[in-house]
Image (tube, rainbow, N blue to C red):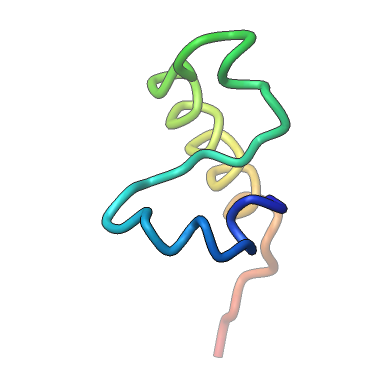
Amino acid sequence: MLFLASDDASFITGAAIVVDGGLTAKTGLPDMLALIEGRRAVAQAMIREAPSSST
């Protein structure tokens, strides 16, 4: 993060830089399918728990 705030970072353009404390470097790319399924399960649980809006 300190580098990105420095003047030297002005040479970096159009790059996606992951700042995750080394998690990606240690574990490799995240399992995107597991992330999507996990988010879907959370969303479905939220829908089930939401009070119905009957008028």
